Image 1 (cartoon, rainbow, N blue to C red):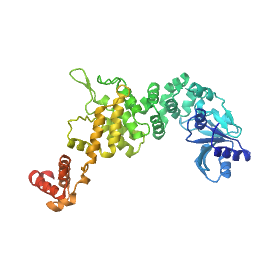
Image 2: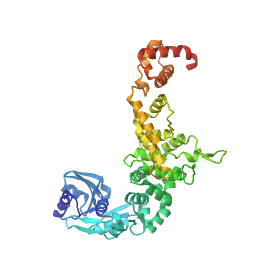
Image 3: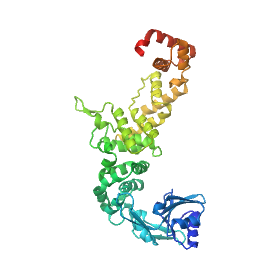
Image 4: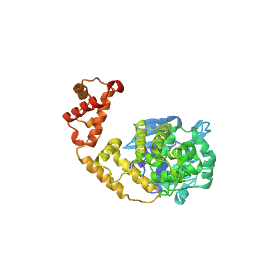
Length: 453
């Protein structure tokens, strides 16, 4: 197996000191599948204290369970002592860990056969007691031993099965799939942060719809994101080939996989439709203000899953503004108002979301000439000298207070908003003297301090 020479050198240090050391987990699986390797995990019969004596830079990352991280010649290597685990009272952590001398005993405790393969980098030998190589060749996700016991030990394994299925394009073996259905409620014992991290990994795959469908079919979706599960069988208008659920997951597939904010927005962009559904006099479904309802529901979902405030704000903003309907009749002022409302930095994502939304209608590639024209129109307007926020005005609140002789307060904001709307309509008005004159006229003719305050 082709691995960096530094990993062999690392293993050689253990061997020369009387210990065994194997490459394990995802690294072995990915090498066998000729995929890239992100992390190198090693298993050894050396205790953590003994590893610390062998290397200079060692950090305790899970010392209670025998895990340390070693920094070695540019590599960050997670090293775990061979162990067996007993009882999982909380469905998340073993009540007791016992160090053992055998790699075979260690491999028994792992989740799936494809992750229970070890590689001896010095003897160039693969250890595969559970048929992991066979399942890799057959593209199967299979739990080790009794699948219900594996899932009861750690409920996150339920979601990991769906993630690996989506990530690797593998099918979940029948007994393992049935066990997920039986045990799906155990996901409720897992912390929101761990669930979020697995969900993010699913969304980063080429086709996240596969992982989300796995969640739906096994009952996990109703536990993790019931709001998305409620989109199943919510029918849409004739331009859509699918219900809201399938449209949402196919839209997610169509969004760029390297932009997690965009993928989340794509997945949740229509999540407000079940709550906004009404049937008009022609028997057609309508979803007025579903983007507003959807943005609010998305905030609750993302808060529950412990996403950051910045991530929540970014996804909400995209969902709130995804229902624009451009036509060539739009004036330049209308384009400027659109840019001002959504903010220039969000435009590429918003256009990408709309493209994904269009593809997701019938899950086939689609080029919108209208969207292309709108993008070109936006680019032309952005090149001109325009104002897209109040801070771009030629005057500020202090100028208004000084010129009109008024105090700081709500009235200053009202005047600034009026000036901003004026300049969006007529960019040439954005000069100091012109704006001060407009502000004075607006204040004198339209504002009455006693009503404003």
